Amino acid sequence: MAKKDKHVSETPATQFLRHAGVVFTEHSYDYVDHGGTAESSRQLGVDEHQVVKTLVMQDERAQPLIVLMHGDRQVSTKALARAIGVKSVEPCKPEVAQRHSGYLVGGTSPFGTKKAMPVYVEETVLALEKICINGGKRGFLVGIDPKLLSTLVDAKPVHCAL
Picture 1 (cartoon, rainbow, N blue to C red):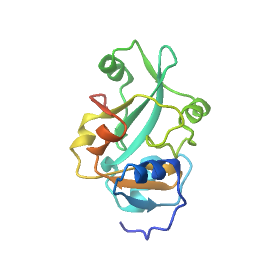
Picture 2 (cartoon, rainbow, N blue to C red):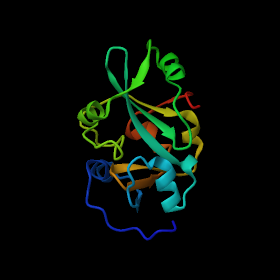
Picture 3 (cartoon, one colour):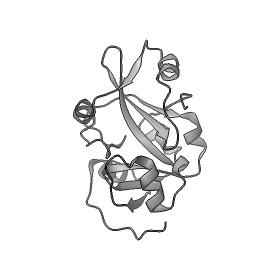
């Protein structure tokens, strides 16, 4: 990583990972509103395809779910809905996403969420050697083996990338 990492205080996500015995790396960057994965990957010197965003969405019954997607790709909500057997999927409003996850939008992690939600991961994410994913705070990513997503949060692979 190009930038020197600074210590970040414990988050529910890092507590979850430590409790599970997961080895992970910590990567801090200067959070920029609406900068997204393009900004974090630029600052950290990581390919944006390896930076995984955590998106809180909901189905037609307003049941929340999490989608993990490559930073440089978008979610096809139609393909996702078909893959998980619901009529429709849409992103949650930021305040609703925060209520479900316990995290501020821009700092949402799939680990240590306030509410248990089903987690879906773009299948090609699982083929990567390592990913950087939000560590539960804006401006903070953790580096992990993506294969751990299946065991840690029971992430189900789907094809929904655009």
